[in-house]
Length: 89
Image (cartoon, rainbow, N blue to C red; front, side, top):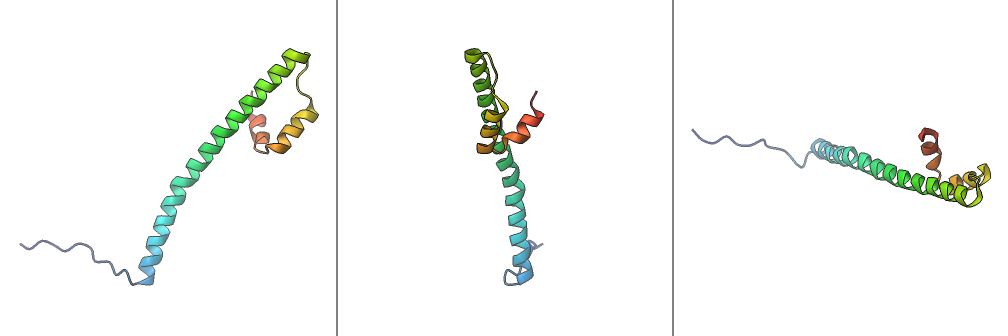
């Protein structure tokens, strides 16, 4: 019995090329987007911890926490903080 030939793909067919390109793009986005958002979340958590430490240090030195004006100025520089502060304890 002769070995069976593999699946023959016509690489000159535009539909085949579009399908392969869509598959590759989908794979890249499907893996890359979550990795990107995970790295941003870790960076945001690190930045939030720095802000908390600054707030603790300010309280130790002055007996007062950071003011709303100061916090707003920090948020303006780092916009992702707004979503983190809303869910922080």
